[in-house]
Length: 448
Image (cartoon, rainbow, N blue to C red; front, side, top):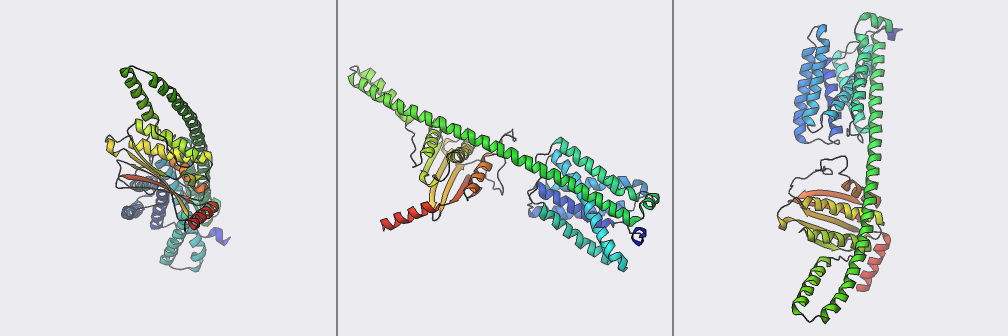
C-alpha cells in the first residue's frame, strides 16, 4: 500500500534529453554497422547540447504546449540521426526515428523508476539520484549496444515503417496516459504504479521492434543465401559451357590439320596466302589457353582470357591452380567467376587501354594459399566494409563479394578488399591443407 501511494517526481528533463541522445546514437550505430568516425563525435556533442537545451526550454512552456514540445524534440532527434547518417534514406530514417523514440522512452522510464525505487525511500538528495540515474542510463545503453550489435537497419519495407510508427504511438499514448490527470493516477493507485506500467509498456515496445529486426535479419540472410546459391549455379553452368566450348576449340584445331593438307596441295600463291592469313587469324583467336594445373581453373581462365583479348584488357596470370584443388567445383567456379567478373566490370569503365589491367595470382606463402585479383580502377578511396554496388538494381547485385567471403569462411580462410593508388585488390587467404603441407615438405627435402 505504501508503494502505491508513493508520489514519485517526474523524470528530469536533462535525463530525458540524454536518453533521447543515446537512443539516437544506438540507431546511428545500426545505420553505420556499429562504426563511428571522429568527425561524428563533434557532431554528436553538438546534438547533445541542442537536445538538452530544447528539453529544458520546452519544460518552461505551459502544459497546453506539451505536445508541441515533444514534436520539437522528436524533430531534433531526426536531425541528430540525419546529421550522422546522411545516406540512410527516408524509409530507413523514419524507421530509425520511431525506434529511437521508443528506446528513449524506455531508457528514461526504466532508469528513473529503478532509482526512485532504491534511492527515494532513503531520502537522499536530488543530485545523488540524478547522478546514479545517469550511471544506470549509461549501463542500460551499453547493454543494448552489446546485445544488438549484430542488428542493422537495412531493407526497410513500408509495412515495417507502419509497424514502427504504430508501435511508437501506442507506447507513447499508453506510457503517458497516467500523467494526464490526477484522476487517472488515482484509478491506477498512484504515480509509482503509473511508472511501473509505463516501463512495462516501453519494454514491450522495444521487444516488438527487436523481434521485427530479428525477423528482417533472418529474411535478409535467407534472401542472400538464395541469391548466392543461384549465382553459384550460374557460375557452374558457365563452367559447363566453357568446357563445351573448349571441346569445340579442340575440334577446330583438328580441322586446321586438314586445312594445312589442302594448303600444301594448292598451287596458286594468292590463294595459298589467303589460306595462311585465315589460319593465322584463327590461331591468334584461339591461342588463349591458360594452364594452371587445375582443369576447372584452366577452362574458366581460358574463356576469360579470350574475352579479355577481344575487349583489349591486359590480363596477367601467375597461378598455381593445383593449390585450389581442395575447393569443390561449384565453389571454385564461383570464386573465379565472381572475382574476375567484378574486375572486368571495373576496368571496362576505363577508356585508356593501357590502364585496363587485371592481375591474378594464386601462390603459396608458408602455410597459406594466397588468391589475389587486382584491377586498375578510377576510384581511389579506401573503405572499411564491402564496397557498395554501383549498379542501379541494388537488390540483384552486390552479392559477388559476399559469395567470395562465404567461400573463404567455408574453407577456414579470410577475405580482404581495399584500394591503394587506384588499384583495387581482392585477397583471399586459405590455410594450406595438411596433405599439401606434407607434400611440400617432401619436395623440399628431395630438393635439398
